[in-house]
Image 1 (tube, rainbow, N blue to C red):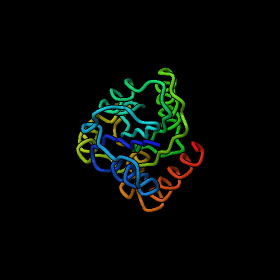
Image 2: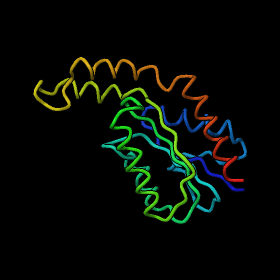
Image 3: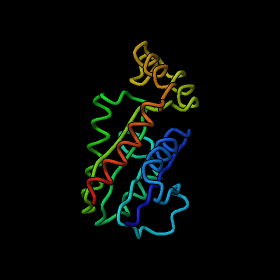
Image 4: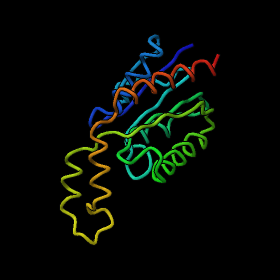
Length: 168
């Protein structure tokens, strides 16, 4: 079986998850999205970071080109994995992939450290702005700094093994 693990990573978080997935499937091709030549694979793991409750633009552009494939997805986000925002991300990504007649074999996601430039920009917002720093948001930013951690990476490897076992 020909397998591709591909990703877009802004701060390195999603790349770490892609590498952890690859540890579970060392025979797979592991490529950043920018290096993909074609989509001639039996199974595609597609991953990215979250921007506005869906994949980042690079991953979104690729995902829109994947049709009639067995796919698994993965992503990192600054929000907590059990949050409503994370659920919205899953729903948006699965809808996109299903609309292209793909067979979704599963998904994995975890919290990831937030780009310091984004935190710096958010910190300049007025206090009445919906995205301005409040105590809850600052705590989440601090919690995110340690992710993906070793447990997240181990779970990503387990996820890859689970997907392969489902696709035999």
